[in-house]
Image (cartoon, rainbow, N blue to C red; front, top):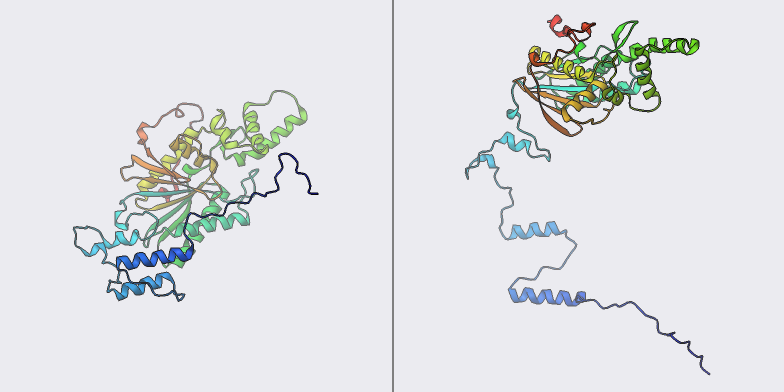
Length: 373
């Protein structure tokens, strides 16, 4: 006897549908041959393994078509007014102007952060990795140096910035030899305009935060050991700044957003840097400037130009500044963004710090470039 089927159960297995709307390959080839015959197109030779590009090349050659490239646009005709220099510059994927389109008198400034340093508790020099970073940055900068151009290296008066500028120079000179170009390289020259933002302590007045760390740490330890009396305000503000860094925070962001009475304000740092740019524009017109400095002033400069904080620059990362010959307009470029800026002349700058005690803090320093000339 056969097995009884359960209600709702079927022995048939559903298989996927295999119908195809297109014709089989043999039929498709037949239809293609019929279409070519009806339109009078000769049949293609059988495929012998020759690449398609080579078969097309041979077909054009047999048909008598020209195989040479069309004449360049700068050869004349059709009213096209192009130059060979422009065509050479537009051969690459980058959109760059021809060399003759460069504006004369334009001041090019590469503001470079110092390379990896040994630490921030003292004004130490660079690590071996930092020396390589600076040398590499100089080698990269050499690719954009034109033959016969003048390059001036300046730096902040700190050990890490001076060593960065020195290694940048070595990499720059090595690159120029490699590319077969000659350029006049001068420096590095320390300039007070490009120093780091300053902090004040009673022991030595205004100086770099790393230079003030030893006094801060010694006084803080004495207060922690004795625990008598209130801590002075300068010690409280430095303690907040350094503890932000020790806790893994962003001390530069804290400096730019929290008012501190014993720290140089970011606005004054930006004005001080612009005074250095304008001084270099007057003393070195047409030269390319490479400035090794610190992340705090660079970040304040970029924040002033863009209207927002673009973040902490990496070691040997650069903020590029271009000052027009009029000394009134310029551009600031950082991390693939360029912003046009207005450079006010010095008589229009604020004078907030000139009448207060300790006015030397805001006094304009004497340029060592001017002294050496």
